[in-house]
Amino acid sequence: MHHNTRLLLDFSPLLAFFVVNKWLGLGPATFALMGCTLLSLAVIYAYERKLALMPLVSGIAVTVMGGLTLLLHDEYYIKVKPTV
Image 1 (tube, rainbow, N blue to C red):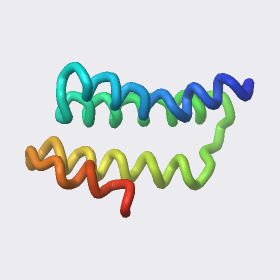
Image 2 (cartoon, helix red, strand yellow):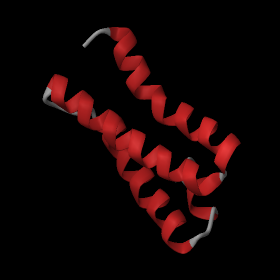
Image 3 (spheres, rainbow, N blue to C red):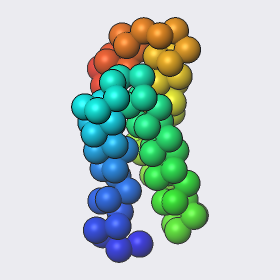
Image 4 (tube, one colour):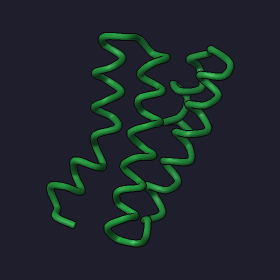
């Protein structure tokens, strides 16, 4: 995979989160972060047939903490994710 493509895939979930948060709020931004993260991991896996440990751990953390944020309607969980 080309280096620039990999950078785009790595940073697109974060970019999506900030853009959606600015326009629609934290709930939709959390959903965008989760979706883009899972899509990014899927594309990387499709090209490389493997996932590095850190993106995988980060994807799991985003999914769990983002899911809790959306399920419980409590922004605490998505805000504490970087600490975890």
